[in-house]
Amino acid sequence: MIQVLIIDDQALVRTGLRHILAQCSAITDIREATPTEKDLARSRKLCLDVILLSVNLPGFTGFGMTRKLKRQHPGAGIIILAEHANAPYPKRLLNAGASGYLTRDCEARELLEAIKTVASGQRYIGSKAARQLALSILPGRVDSPFEELSAREMEVMLKLTAGRRIPDIASLMCLSPKTVSTYKYRILDKLGARSEVELMRMAMRYGLVKAEGMMGSQVCEEGTS
Image (tube, rainbow, N blue to C red; front, side, top):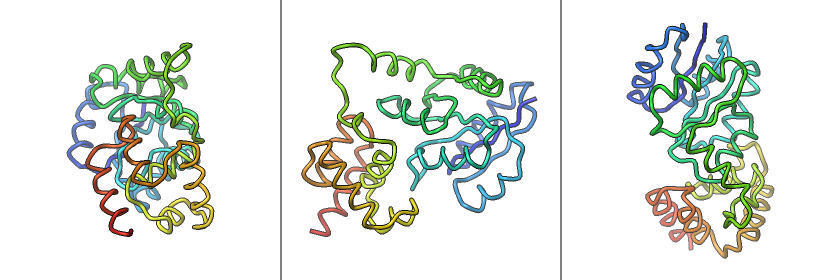
């Protein structure tokens, strides 16, 4: 019998996922939560087999949330439900503690198969993510410059491209502003970017952020100049 927790900020999405999961007789308990501290604290008391986590939650990058959930529920498998399988997301999130990775356009049967697989203690990689992971080891491929970033640097980078300011990032990641600033300049140096605006354009070009996210962040950046 499988107990699942769905984490997403949108009630409509959670309802849709619950409807799909309810079709599987092996799944006996389905819980829902928003990515708030109150809901996450309440979920600590649950005995879970699988956590279905959206990585496109406002204010979260997925990496920090995955690590937090893994600490809270070491016995549960975490399945990432993402909008795309672009490198280096799948590999980094799996390294952060996820047991599965699917894109939002996967079929219902694949989602159910992933849940049963992860609940049994195995890993499950969706077809699109598996293809990207396979391509990543082929000789002669053009690497994404973001592959050079560590998981921590990726986390800071995604918060910067979301328009977060250094003090806010420091608070969210329990770091000092000075440490976040160091990460920021290390990221710019590794990527060869001269500013946060250029960083956002690079992230959009490689499919790591959406166009609207970049525009909003660009306005913040230019408004402070």
